[in-house]
Length: 330
Image 1 (cartoon, rainbow, N blue to C red):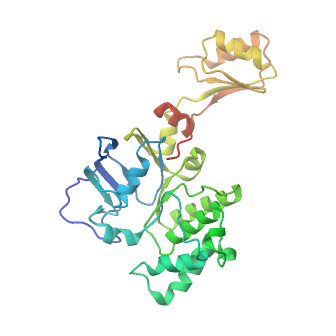
Image 2: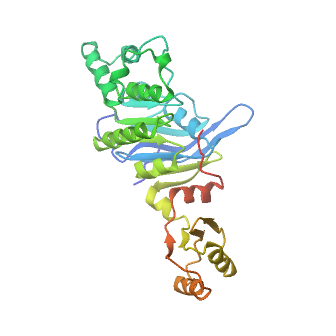
Image 3: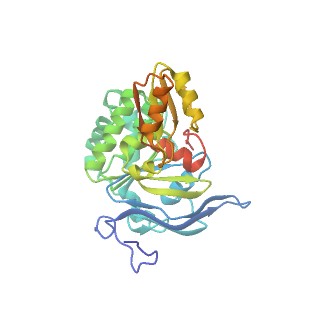
């Protein structure tokens, strides 16, 4: 059920009063000096317990939205609620329950990885100093940095710095984790480890709000997603439903790709691409009889090894919605 923006009282994080939406915005808008409209009337809803993907091309308003959600930027108009409390007014109440890795980590290069985490933990007024060392060691272990804990952060690779930033976000149990490009700079093994960690956190009840330019990452990890473009929300909902709205691709596997492409083109197919023995085209309209199309290929002497329509992917949906390619960083 939809919630109204004008509630009588603000729930305290952890009381269970806001079990449906962990993040909720109404008409959230940010206009910078000079009239630049960065975010335009955003109505966003992030279900509790979900891994939620946040997508959009460069300049789409993703980063500005995240800054407003974290209380770093004041909205021009509209409202944002995080863990049931208004932001930025509720930042003191909310932020101890939120871990964030935004726009890349910026560790102190002259300190070791371990000492960086100690400093971050000391900055938290709610952190018990008696258990600080245990928290730091557990966070290092969880992100795979225990062996490099004594190395100066200035000697860390980009991937190691990314892990350190994630460790800082995980020093305390969090109800919400906001991650901006969490696998940036990681090798394939490191990416798999971070993805496994995100799944583990979600299974423990943490809501993960994930901004990534890797659409296959979003499709693998996220149950829900939202797509932004030019400051406006284009679509949000379950990832499977968003992908399902994209037209699939007709795919023919044949040792006669040139002939297959010609036959498909003669019968009105569009978007034809050939890759070795694989010929793809935009899926035909629903009224098209696929069996007749297959028969036409065979009549023309095309040796068909496989023939069918592959379902649309999140990448297909993204391109269809935004009109842009899938490099959506920023």
